[in-house]
Length: 590
Image (tube, rainbow, N blue to C red):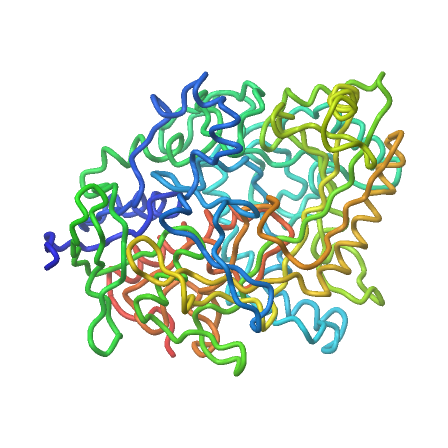
């Protein structure tokens, strides 16, 4: 029999960026809040300190900050007619675990989405005609606009202390920034990173070809900064240990370095770690949540936490899985196209170009940071004319210098033996003279890309695993080939001795790492039959359940999702504080 805890007003399932933002926004409300984190507590000191944190084998290869797939994993397949198998080792994506979640091991690239991204189907139909969107795609408008989110983007960027140079301030286009970006109310709070040598070569070549390069907006701080919460961050040391690692210098924005120092002292918030949530408890008619049930990981005891409001604030597909396990909403069925939970799972469409330079070009990429990059946005989203191209969407092209750590970074040209003395000689020859361009592309929803509960495999607690059915749409493959060709043109201008293009191909494989930009599954919108939540992240079916994170995205844009995840968290927090707590119930009529 489960032990019952005292009732609270709000319970959070997962304590990362989004839970921390919402809990902090409710600091002045007379509400009692509990954050349930399945992992352990951790902080910059002592958990992220060097030299232990600079263990590339332990953290980059063996995924020391990531989900333990021996206890809970996902099953994967490319098509609905295939049998899904469990992901036994982390590969294509790396869900985080413990306090702070993926906000600890992210790299700090902080892009806003474009205005057209939020009205994607409407935008393409208005610009190119109603038949412009390929039939295989199920892209849709979000139900909110960029203008709705702009103030919340601003708040999140000032919380993080993002470093950059704005290209569009209140409609004033400023060369040197991203001239394609949507208007922002003010500049970034901190100056941009200085280009690495690879980035400088890229920028010159891009400008020679008529493009508009700029520095990637970075949450790796370029100077000391005190954020609006009064929390101090320090300048990045360019050590090259960002993505997959915690930052010992208080220089990468994470929940630990931006919000946790004040949230842990907030009187109306309690953190409870080692709490693995099994389900959201519902009334018989499933119209209201009464709290959650979780396992106390330390004791194995089942615990019930009553609450008036439940916020699902875990990693993207964990939120969708918990809704399916709990009976919130209707599971999506790809055969009929019916159902509102599980649809529109998307990812990111990546490709690259490898550049092998002569030995007199020393790139020194071991001096890096997660968001140290130079980028062009000319081929992102709908920034270029798609007429006659046969696809929608695009990709940014960037030259990143993120660390070139010795275990994982050993570039050699095609035809090199995979082991032995010749391979070692090639690694020594090319290590400091090889760089890459990354094409970071849009991922568009299709009817047959979705998530559901696996009928065969279960986790350590006896619950069905989440099943991911995904492959790259032909639209996205055509886009990837087109943008990769543009990147090759820039690479030639950069003067590389040998250029190797690596366009995206199908089928998707879970083995090589790509990104941890998993999106969809509980998407937002205006139609309760086809979307899981309304424009505020509130469940259509169970109005005292709110959902956060990239699980809300109807499709994924060109850019890294973190900035939009943070903006949406502030947007939802305002709706809860200013509307829901004053009058509980649906915020959007059905």
